[in-house]
Length: 46
Image (cartoon, rainbow, N blue to C red; front, side, top):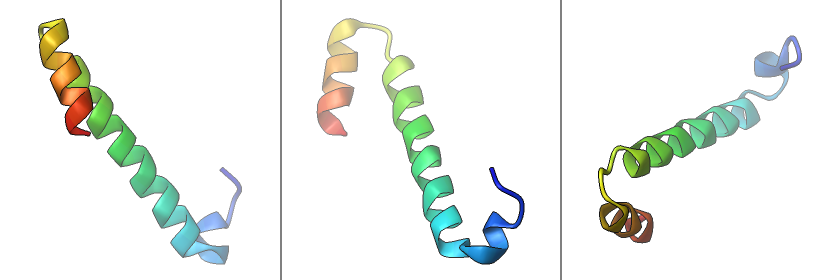
C-alpha cells in the first residue's frame, strides 16, 4: 500500500478495505461448513 493513500483517496481505500473484508467473510463462511453439500448451499447463498 502506498504511503498517504488514505489521505489522497479515502473513499477508494475504504471501498478496497470493505471488499477485502467481505471476501474474507464469504471464504470463512464457506470453509466453516463441514460437508461438501453444506458448502455448495453456502456458495449458492452468496
